[in-house]
Image (cartoon, rainbow, N blue to C red; front, side, top):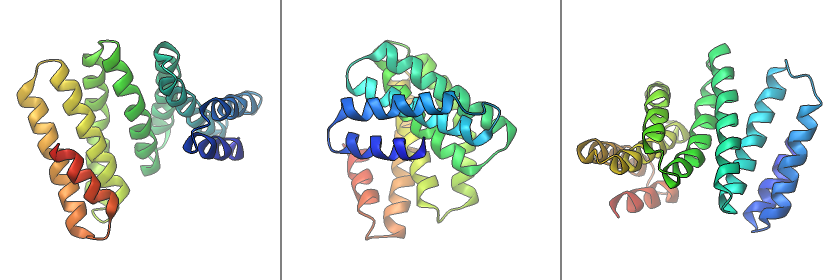
Length: 193
C-alpha cells in the first residue's frame, strides 16, 4: 500500500488526479484485505483515506471528500489514543487541512472550529517539545490558519484575529530561524495577505 500511495502522490503532483485517485483506492483495497488489528495497516488505511479525500475535494466531490477525510481522522485519532506518537499529530494536521476547508464549503464552520480546538493542544505541545522541528511548527501554523478561517466564518472576529496573529508569529519564528527556508518565507507572506 505504501508504494501505491507514493505513486499516487507523484501522479497527483503532476496533475493526473484521476490516476492518483485510482492508486489511492487500490491502496485502500490492499489494506482492506490485510490484518485490521495491525497498527501499521490502520495507519496506511488512514493515509489512503486522507489522500482519497483530498483528491475527491480537488475534483469537487465534497460529500465524498468529507466522508473519506472524516474516516481518516477517526482512524488517526484512534491510533493516537493508543500511543501518542508525534508523527500522528502531523498526519492529523494534514487530514484536518483537507477536512476543514471542506466543512467550511458546506457551512459546517462550527465543526471545523471544534476539530481545531481538539487537535490544538497536541500541535502546540509538539511545537514546544521540539522548537527546532520546523514540521511541528508548520503544523501548528496550518492549524491556527484553519482555525482562523473557521472562526471568521462563525463571525468570531476576535478569535479569528488571534488565530491569524498566532499563525503569523509561528511562521515569523520559523523564517528568522532559517533565512534560507523558502517555505517559511512564503508562509509569512501568505499570512500577511
